[in-house]
Image 1: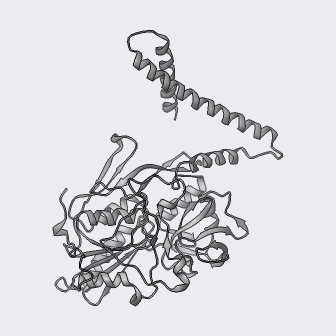
Image 2 (image 1 turned 90 degrees about the vertical axis):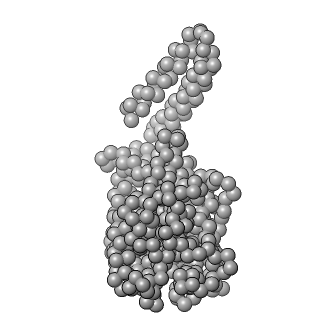
Image 3 (image 1 turned 45 degrees about the vertical axis):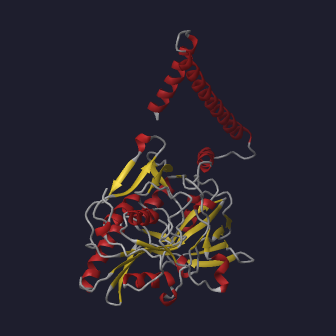
Length: 447
């Protein structure tokens, strides 16, 4: 921090001194003067902040807590950026580390902040939230007797976490419901098992990935190993990878999961403010499926890391994508620890791009084959998730933004039209006349 401040002061001083010296480099002097003026404006605003801070400390009706004032100021500054940047105090930072590790006490939902309320991106399979009927798109307005209004996302998440067997009440605004819904839930130790798998009909491997935490790639490798033990290679017609309602997670896990299905090539690139910040991530380790055909399922609740995987496998013609358009979260958050007891900053530092150079931000991944589910009448008003483009303050998309995509998955497999379409495609049954051929790694685009 001291180095940055020294550089800034040096720039201001140099610009002012140069401006005072007459000479032939007029254009450079004007530019330097403008830079100085912009910086002077910043210092003026910082002085204003200091004045307000001191007025509050001196005159507020009750003696304020300085640390709470500063944390509130930091949160206010970051909330003006985008929905995914946030400050985590020491406890929030610790909670996040627990979540990415894959075990914590709580409800089992992925949430974000939307216009001052906590919005459910997706419940995690087989958790208290999923069993209680929490749905993608639900807005949480109250936790026990405390209103969400005025809380940061981390404060709300902290309140929802707690010891196993403790009870919590949520008040939820749900699209299509005339009145808020109240839900009572008993917390459990959430051991997020990010990968589940089974064999289907003796010829297909089904793999469900629910999140991208530190255990995801190991879970995927285990799933592929067990499936190949159960189904002989000559009978195995392919794999279904189900990423529906998967809210995402760690970037490195998205890269390694993609690598498990790709022989080579770029998985994703991230591009920051300047060209020098561009990073490219390539497949490593080789295709563990040995070129078997692959279908990936997505929907309106598939976000972030899920979109990286789907986008990479689609661009390399390694998989056929079936379902509905994904969420459209195409930004990267870098976790910046702020020192002992100071927590960390999750700051949006880049956008990510698929191997073909397409940004998914506020647009999502469009499936090769769109399959809409038959939604029960009582759920029709809440089966669609609005997506990134509907979030207040989101980063603008590159081109026409897309909002709204179906996120409903039938609880009974026999009613799951997208899954049925995937099975039919792998087995050679016609899904529709425009369906692409089932993709295998032998057709992957080299990079």
